[in-house]
Image (tube, rainbow, N blue to C red; front, side, top):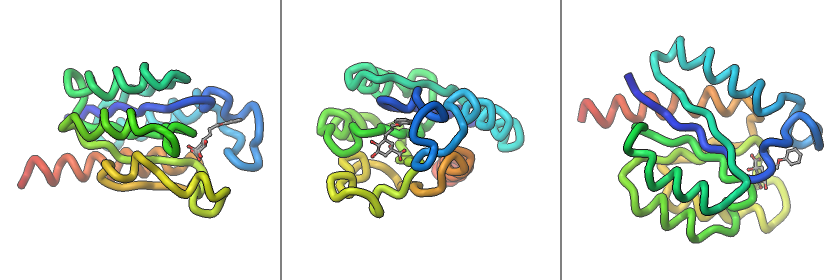
Amino acid sequence: MQRILVLNGPNLNLLGKRQPNIYGKLTLDDIEANCAEIAKTLGITVKFTQSNHEGELIDRIQTASENFDGIILNAGAFTHTSVAIMDAIGSVETPVLELHLSNIHKREEFRHNSFVAKVAIGMICGLGANGYPLALQAMRDYLQAQNQG
Ligand code: CA2
């Protein structure tokens, strides 16, 4: 059974409470509950976490391989600024799939660059909360393919 860590970055704890026009009405707890349901149908285990702190996210990326086979990462605004998170991903074997609720390419210019994208296996963005189950399925399939290869 594949074990997947869903890691959410800064301000994502505010989901559903502010700016629903951009990020939707669901709270992070709602999304976590959806992920737990989907995990059962996908035959995977999922741990869902959030941190507002760059160093904490880095620690979780560095230690993920102790308990997880893959990481789904919505690094929030650190996506566009953090060479340190990029380096952490680059330094581990655990595959990372980048995820965003909004379509970062359709938004302000400063959101178009992603440091995470340079080291991620792929990216899902612009599909709102639906991106989370899609990312879980994509990571499950990626890990399965790796194990067969
Ligand atoms: O679209 C995404 O998932 C983002 O990672 C969300 C980040 C943003 O900085 C990225 O460019 C794209 C922002 C998360 C902040 O979430 C809030 C939710 C509700 C109210 C305020 C912020």
